[in-house]
Length: 198
Ligand code: ZN
Image (cartoon, rainbow, N blue to C red; front, side, top):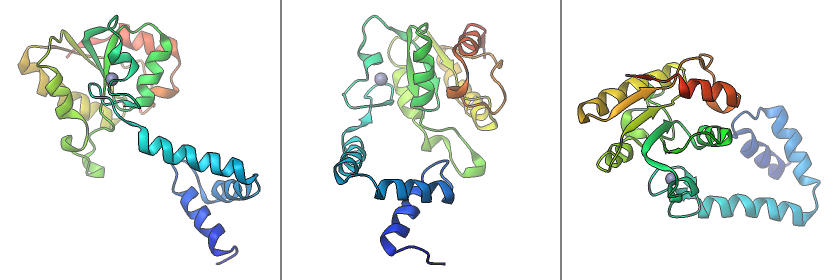
């Protein structure tokens, strides 16, 4: 069913490949973009290309940043010996928004999922283990309470425990399957305060 021209179809196809965008939304967005002034479209396209070219992983915690070290890792007032492990940069942002966490982070960029064929080698785990060679007092595992998040938490705890570093898991007051980024700050802090040793 070729309703539109090749260019519009191509744009719709690209947009519908984005997370959470169905074909109807993709069509709506495509027509919106086509009707924008040329300069707006160029600015938009430029922002995508420049972000892709300049954003990289923080040399310490692997979150997305445009510096060698992200602002949290570069901040000497943060407690560098407490590492909170999260699945993605959005979860990091959620905890940062509470303004109450004083440690640093480690961003895995995913979770172990045998169903999807995502193994320990596909997330930033060896980068985490490498950090344990420095002075680390506690690793707080704050992966989601989904099956993948729990699997990842268990895997990490088994990996770290023999090193003697304290491993804790945030409390499961967080709704099952809930993405950390959608949970309010009070719940996040309660989950952090109620963490238990694994
Ligand atoms: Zn960092």
